[in-house]
Every structure is written in structure tokens, then in C-alpha cells.
Length: 356
Image 1 (cartoon, rainbow, N blue to C red):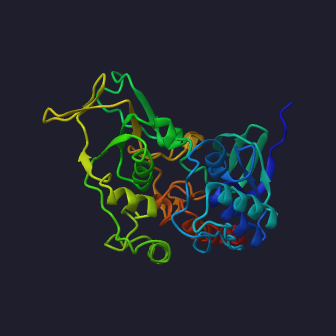
Image 2 (spheres, rainbow, N blue to C red; image 1 turned 180 degrees about the vertical axis):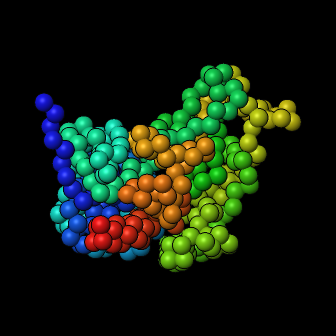
């Protein structure tokens, strides 16, 4: 006999920063909601970063500029910028302080239409809701481009998610691919112990040394409050010159080469005939939204995106997307932006709940 579905106003899928921020505003508005999180422990991917991945990861902003709504992040003793462990501990305590209705571990396999509402099918049960907030992030879908010769290269190939410490590359020849902040920061670390070459599809753009911490956060606040429309010199699209990246620049390790044409058995090769032997290629090539659970709704356009009005689905107004980058709101995949975009989404949800 099938177990009856749980009935709630709103289901939030994902217990990371965006999901917790949505839960905060929903509880404050008195909505009956549940947050379904696939992780075994609180803290989202920050907990995994601390326990398993990039041990030296730090936020680009200080604790005072990295808070979710309702409780400022405390400073981490002895650190100017919070570590992954500190962020994970903050999110854990945030969840507890606001008594957020998180259920874990619950893996959501699909969201589908049922009798005029949305039905969320999870590993421990089924929920029916008038609104669903998808906040599953991108961490589970690392993107590695299908570059020519990938299958030929006999060295090691890694993605950002596979990185642990620079010591594992000591004395090796390493190609770092990508023009992001993570690429620059990992290059800075690895270049201290290994021979490195950095390749990017377009010349990297570096922020000035003073655009760091408060200045960086002021820029971010402007982007968030302005809806993310300012893409000029004050945007967040450049590489932030954190201390480790500045040191790498000063010793000449930040000279980027154009993207290589192909991988070879022993390294990489450019179209002009130049080659570089390598032991490892580190792909710092980003992530893609984790949205497989929404496939039954058949909402994706030919580019694999779901058309949105803000962060509300155009074809299914009961569905809202949070935390997938600027696509779902300015800086929505950051601690700073998560609260702003979550508040906007919940305002629309609550208004609908009142009139529906």
C-alpha cells in the first residue's frame, strides 16, 4: 500500500545557503514548509570542502560581509577570511538557531505535477506542495569540456572538486585550465611546489589590488541591489587579487597562455606547433546546475535552461530556482546574494499563498 504524501505549502529542495535562506524567510512569514537535503550533515558543500576537498579554501570576503539573513557570521579566530570549516559550522548553527525544518538525508528523484500541485518524490517519502523551491546548486555537476585528445593523455586529469593540497603535485609539471578565481588561486598554490603553465580561453582580467574585502563586498552589494545589471569595471567578473594570487603574480606565475588545441599522450599542444609536457591537467572549468529532478516537468529550453521571470519559472509559476548563479539572481550562489534572492522569491510565494 502506498504511503500517503505529506501536504505542505512549500517544499525547498537543498539545504545549502540558498535553501536555508529561503527557509528562514518562509518560517518568518508563517508558511508551512520543509527543506529536503540530500547531505547527511548540515553545512552543504562547505562541509565536504572541509572534510574531503580543497583544504585551504577561504571566502573572498570577511565574515561580516558573508552572512545569511537573520544572523551575522561570527569572525573566525585568527583568520581574516573564513575557512570552509568555519562556513560549514556557521551554516550548521544557522539552521539550529532558526529551527529550520530540514529533513536529511533525503534524495529527491523527481518533481512532477499531480492534481493541480507539485509533487516531490524523495528517498524517504513524497510531498505535495503549492510551491517548490529548487536550491540544489551546482556542486554535484562539475564540468570538464570535451577537449580534443582528452582520451589520449596518459597523465592525471582532475577537476577543481578533486583537488586536495598542492603537495600532491610536488616536482611535477601541471597545466591549470580556466580563467576563474579558483583557477588563479589553485595555480598560486601549486606553482610554489611544481612547474606550472596556465591556459585560458580569453585573457584573464585581474581586479586591482585594492578591490578586496570591503571594496569587493561594496561592489557585490551594488550588483545584488541593482539586480545584477552593472557589468562594467565595477563588476565581479575579474580575478580577485587575494594575497596568494598577488604573490604568484610577483614571482611571474600568473602569465596565461591561450587555450591549447589538443591534449597529446604526454602533454598539451597548440595550433602553432608548440607543445608542453605535463604530468597532470587540472580543469578549473566550473559547474553546471543540478536540475535532473525537474526533468519530468519538461521545462527546459534547447540550451538546457529553464526560462525564468526573476527566479520564478515562466511555464510553471509554482516552481522557483535559487542559488544557480546570476541566472537566478545577482550573485545568488554566494552567501551575500543568497539572502537577497531568497527574500524576493519568498515574497512572491507568500503573496500567492495569501490569494490562492
